[in-house]
Length: 186
Image 1 (tube, rainbow, N blue to C red):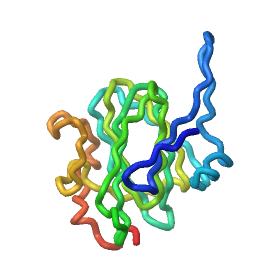
Image 2: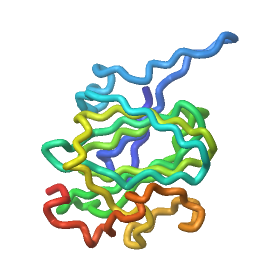
Image 3: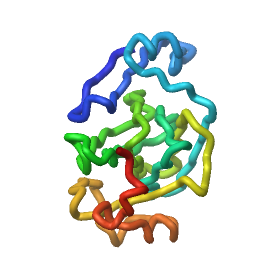
Image 4: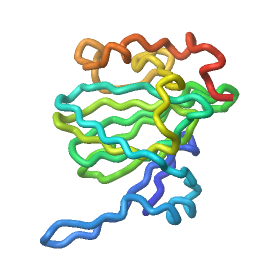
């Protein structure tokens, strides 16, 4: 598995190998030992699968605070997304900065996002399916969010706000500068 470094060293893009022939392919998308050798030691406890029927669906930016913080390993089984990780670790040299990558069924890349980052994505194609492993169970009372289009984050989503399809909850997240201190990582 190839590791592609990002501007924020804790966020890693992974490129699993695909072994194919006329029948199709086989790919080892998760191997705990191999990831540990790459410096990724998340103990994943839950798999999630989302499907977005339209392009321009925005999900996020979400994260969970301790003691239910989550590492995430995200990949796309069908379609394509622009995936975004925002550093919400107060005191980090990259606090408020983000990494954005294209993940697709075609490029077969994955992204590892450690705890302390808000995560979101926008679908680039209809019927996009996203699979992700998390290192802690979903805990609604510990879930937090940041507004996807906060100007201070300067995320280039590739869509304008009028074409974004969001849940009511995601429309109401605060801007990063409005997040309570206790809802950020230290």
